[in-house]
Length: 387
Ligand SMILES: [Zn+2]
Image (cartoon, rainbow, N blue to C red; front, side, top):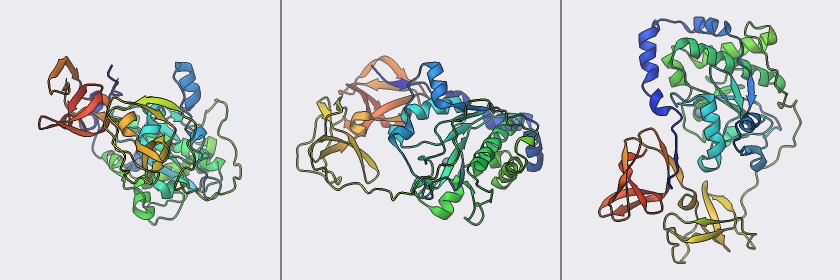
């Protein structure tokens, strides 16, 4: 059985934004008037991920239950503004995707925002994995989804600004634009890359620029809602129960460094099928002289561990292999693609469709001179078809 995940309307959304903008919107819409447009809208409201998933009957993978990232001063000291760079994906699509995949893609934020409202993924009381090791234990982090017309863009930034202002008030964080001098409380992911490092993304500037908008404009909108609170024309109408708790002082903790070796074998946690031949490493990520494990073998897993920022699974005392050989990683299908067996022979007429996500296991393998990724037991796809 193949594990193909539907593409969150990616394929459908890819060509829409530029076309819609050019066809329906005058070019010279000034940013100040975009903020005026934004303020005409009322707040879309806040949805909590766990409650949303419960209603849909989808398993909630609690990020904070497994990753307690303490802020260096015990509470967030500012916000990082992100943009998803995924045309056609709504906050709902993103929330479902990140709930399912954070443990594989090492990425998570506090909230996704679109024209409809805000989905809070986890409490801002603790940090997330959104903007690299320097920023993650300082800031709460919010992702704006892409819209395809100006009216919806205005609604989305209105929801974003109201939510951010609300969290800032809750944690007593005074707005101060950090994007020019690297000092302050309102950051873009780009500013983190520029002034703090540990990450190299440039969002949301490029997406904002498509709308003739900037971080300075968005800062003004946040400041407006921070200063005006509920009296802004976009009123805060959150009626959900309040899981955003008041500030709890938490003693800052020094991040623990991973232990160099594991003294004893922990209890097994799972039995997994190895999907790709895999070298055996020690607890420091150094190759051992042990024979490699063969694809198709059953492994007893004793836990997982990050070694040099790469995820490994423990398979024995001081024995580890790279987790992607077992767990795989999602890749986007660039072109419709046939599936082949280990002899390079096409399997039936099944095709992966452009825009789907497919899980691949380990690195590329060569079959009869061509490179393939393993997508399942006895199933291969040519590497050029995946991104
Ligand atoms: Zn970002």
